[in-house]
Image (tube, rainbow, N blue to C red):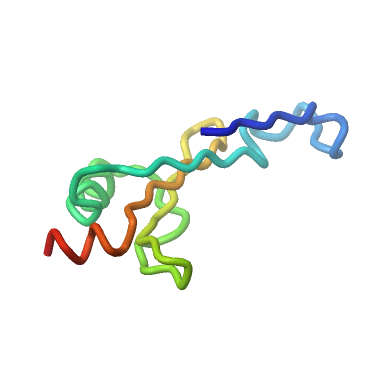
Length: 84
């Protein structure tokens, strides 16, 4: 995993903005991504990008926490299709 942080003031984000604006973390999961998506959605987690197959070989969705951090969960499409 690679994390890169840029001071908010360097890119024009002021103190009135959410802390996590502009930060997105990508995590590959081992389990069933559809079940995980359903669990988070049922708990009321804010989904900012619905689950879908991407043309570059992953199935992914993105959530946002209360501070504005975005977390993208993905699974390799070939692993997803094998498990179905």
